[in-house]
Image 1 (cartoon, one colour):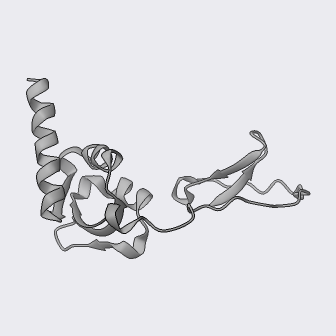
Image 2 (cartoon, rainbow, N blue to C red):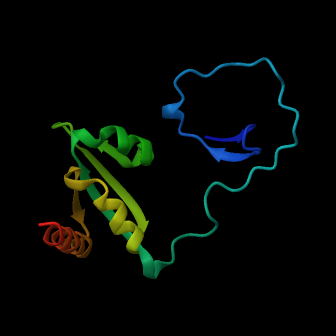
Length: 128
């Protein structure tokens, strides 16, 4: 949810799932609203676009539901979650997926799965 943060005097994005106890102050908001775009303009360039199929363990459920739109998350009978997502393929994508540790399995594409495995192996060797 995008909202105006009175303390910071700026727009911010808030995760609705983290708003535990909203409080109505009774004070009207008297400011002309001109929120910035939430999504960056334009699509991911085709050359950098990667369509993924990811499986997350049940232990990652809270984070998965925080970070992915519910319409791309499919719960599986064993409690794991299947996510069909499109990313821009760059170094940030690998770091992001590695941040899930063993809670994520890249089902496709094969090139992403292999490269992520190589990076994980390099990390393991450096920390052995």
